[in-house]
Image (cartoon, rainbow, N blue to C red; front, top):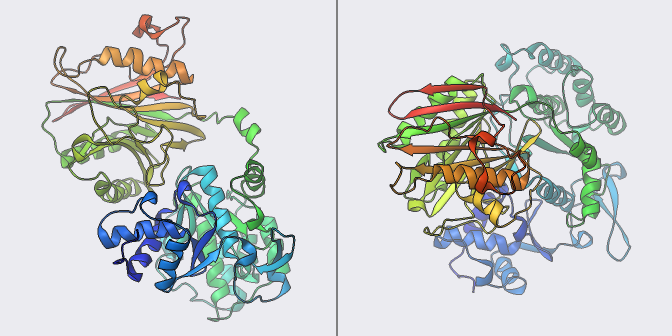
Length: 565
C-alpha cells in the first residue's frame, strides 16, 4: 500500500534524485512512464524514492503495486502517466521536416516525431547504462566559462582563436554572461566522459565557425567534419537573445575541450536528428552493438584483442598502526601520500576500513567527494584513490574510488567470513547506488574486492567479468596468535587463489596493528606456476615484483610499493 502522506513535493524531490543519480537497471519501467519536463521516469521507482522524503525510507518494490495503484496515485497528485510505447507519447508540436525523423510503432504505422522526442533521449540513457553501468543525468561539473579563466593554460591560444572568430562573426562581443557552464547532459563516471545530446539549435553558422577553428590535436568523441556538414545543412538561427548562437557555440566548445580542461576522455556528441534512437531496444544485444557502432565507434573484438599497452602505475599502501587514529588523521595521511606519489603513481590503493563511521557510509561520500576531489584538482592530478569505508559498526564494508572528478566507483563486500554478519552485496557484480565496482583506468579494467571477497572469487568459482587486475582492500592483521593474524593464509589462498582463478594480477593493502609490516608479505601477486593448488604455493613462487619501495614514518607508518600492470 502506498502511504497517503506522500505529497507532490516529495515526488519532485524523487525526480531530482533520479536526474542526479540515474535509475538502477532493475527499476526501469516496462509499460508506463511518468512524463515531467520533457523527460520520462519509471512511476514505481519514483514513488519508492518519494516515500524516503515523506517517511524516511525507500519503499521496496514488493510493498506496493505498480500499474493501476501507482499510476492512479501519481495522477491524483497532478502528474501525467503515459504509455512507454513511442507511438503513444505526445512530444509537442512539430516544427518543420528538417527537424523530424520517422519512427514506426509496433503496428507498422509511421509516426513523425521531432528531435525533442523524450523517448529517444531515454533510450540513449538506457543504452549507456547497459554499456557502462552508472550514468549521471544533468551532471553538475565546475567548468569556467570565460576566456580569461584559461589565460595560463597551454591551450589558451586555441580557445582565444575560437572566441575571436565567434566575436567577429556578427560583432557580438559580450555573449559570455555566466561564470560557469550549466550541467552537462550526461556524465559517464567510468571511464569518465561527457555526453551531449544535440538538437537542431546546436547546428548553426556560429557552431560551424567554432568547429572549423578546432586544433588538429584535439580529441573528440564525434566526427567534427560531420558536425560541420550538419551545420551547413540545417543553419539553425536562435536570436533570443540576439547573440544566443555565439553563446551556445562557445559553451559547446568548452565542453569539447574537457579532455584538456578536466582530464576527461573525449566528449561524445549524439545528433538527435539523424537516427530514430527510440527504435533501439537496450535489452537486445544486437541493438546495443549497433548503438556502439553508431555512437562510440566501438569494435568489440578489436578492442578486446588490442588491450592498451600503456602501463598503469599502482601504489599499494600498507599501514602499521597502534590503533590510535581518526578520520581526520587519516585524511591528513592521505594528503601526504598524494603529495608524495603525485608524479609516481596513477592509483593509490589503501586498506579496507580506512575511514570509519557509525552511520551509513553514504554520509561520508559527499564529504570525501568534495575534500579529495578539490585536493586533486588543486594539484591538477589525474591520480585515482581507492580506499575502504566501514559504516554502521562494520555492517557496511565498502570500497570506493575517487578522482578529481569525484566519486567514480563503489563496491560492497559480498563474501563475509564465517564469524561475521554484514549487509552484503547481492552478487559480486551488483551495482551500489547505481555505481559499478569495476572501473577503467588507461584502458585497463579493475575490480574492487573488499577483504574476504577474494576468497569468494575462488570458492564460488566466479567468472572473470573481463577485468585486467583485482584490487583487494584488506582490513587488518594482528600479532600472531591474536585475533585476525592470518596474513600468510590470506596471501596464499586469497591473493594467489583469486589470481589463479581469474588469470590476472591482484594487488592488496592492509593495516598491521601493533606489529611490523612483514617485509616479504606480497602486496602484488600473480599466479604463474605449475602447482595444482594454493596449498603448496610459496612467496618465492610469485613472479610479480615492485620496482620501488617507500617508507613514510609518522603516527601510522606507511609502506608503499610501486607496481606496473
